[in-house]
Each structure stands twice: as C-alpha cells, then as structure tokens.
Length: 328
Image (cartoon, rainbow, N blue to C red):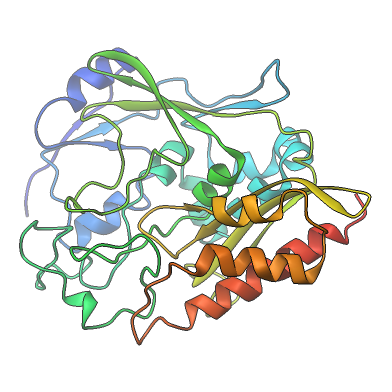
C-alpha cells in the first residue's frame, strides 16, 4: 500500500501554500480524484482537504447574476431557488449528471476540474498523451465511440465529461480563483482547454490555485433556458452529446441566444457560429437547422463516432424548438 499525506488548511491562502507543493492534489467530494487513484491514473503525495474553507454559499449579484461558492454541492446548487428560477439550464444540467449520491458529494470546484474521459486515459497499462505526454494517442485509430468530433488534435481526442460546465459555458460564467500570485479569474469558455500539443492540461488554472467561486452574469432571458442530454441509459451515464441553450424570441424573431455543446470536444463547446447564424433570424426549424449545420461543418469524426454529428444536429434543433414554443 502506498502512503498518502493528508492536510486540512483553515483558509484559502493556506490551501494555496500547500497545493503549490509538488504532488499535492485538492480533495473536495473526491468523486473523480478517488476513482482515478484507484486505477493508478492519479498518485498524489498529499491530499489537501478544501472542505473547510467556507466556500459554500450562493449569493445574488447586483447585475441579476449569481456568485456560486466552489464548495457548494451539486445537489444543493440544483435545488437553489435562485438557480431554478433564473437559470433552469444550470439546474437541469446538474440533475442530469451522475447519481443522487454522487451529486450529494460532488462540489462545484471539483466538478469543473474533473478529468477528460477516454478509455485509454483510464487504463494505466495503455499509452496516452494525456496521462504520459509523448506516448501517443491510440484512440485515434482504436476505441473512439464516445470521443471528440470538434477541436481535437493529433495528440488527443478525449472529451470533457461534465454537464454543469456545459451550462456554465453557455451562460458565460467566470471562474474566480486564488493562486500563488494572488486572485484571478478565467471566463468560460477559456477555463477548459482544447488539447493542442499539450493534452495533459485540462484547464488554464495556474498550478497551486484554489477555485473560490463561479460568477454567473445576469441574463434577462435566462429563465427561457434548458439542457438536453443524449446518453445510453436513463441514469448515471455520461453524455454522448448534450446541449445547453437559452433563447430570446420576440415577434417570431431571435433577438439573442446562448448555445453550448457537451461531449463533443476536449472542453465544453460554445456554439458561437450557430449563435451568430440565429440572431435576427426567424425562430423556425429551418433557421435552427441552418445554425446547427454552420456549427458542425468543421466536425472531424472518426468512423466510430460519426453518429455524433447528426445526433448533435437533431439535439440542437429539438432544444431550440422546445424553447421557441415554450411561450415563456
């Protein structure tokens, strides 16, 4: 058995100090990190318990938005009345992820930092550029059914597995953190990385930093939003494709829209081409199909995951039709 250290700092600055040491990993709910430790993908020298840092509040912001503490549990966030009324897309994304037991443990900060998914990454006996840079990406010619069709590189085609982050990306959230050089923030998209030539890095969070909160800006049409997830079984399964959407329609015309796709790329995918194609257009199925095609024309699927392109198109169009017909 391999010994692992454990520390429980009393405040954020102390946590940053400990996490800046080589081999330290933050532990909140542990729903991803502990899994990776069990299969030998993660082997931290010390676990830094960040549950006592007082980061567990949801606060209203003056612009109509919310500040969500990094330690808030996913179940608590999904049930928060401000989240449910202002951003149903976020509440539904949270409730579609994992099981009730896992949602009770998973934290907002930990959920953002969960590792990208790939069968080769999770198998420590196989080569993987994400786990061991320079060893190759066998997924490109091997098992790739659940992997990326957008934004991949020759070094990695893994996907971000989360649901919450897809909704936060559509909403234009900002991740706040405390790092060795002081406080900072990263917008979404921009917090998670595309693989490029450094797939071992999932985010732009500085080494040693602690996520303190996520700010969700005020969005007047946020209540007209939703999240849809296509998966292989009704519960406890990662998305094959997911869509987060908020839609502002007046007199049959799209005034504004926010769209993001999940499980199609190394990061939650903000669908800006589709958004641009929709603004000022009629809120019709034809317009929605054209917008989906504009977003997906750059897809580069493998033989195994080519189904994701038409699936994403249908899911995006269906989600927009649902919102356009909601009458809210």
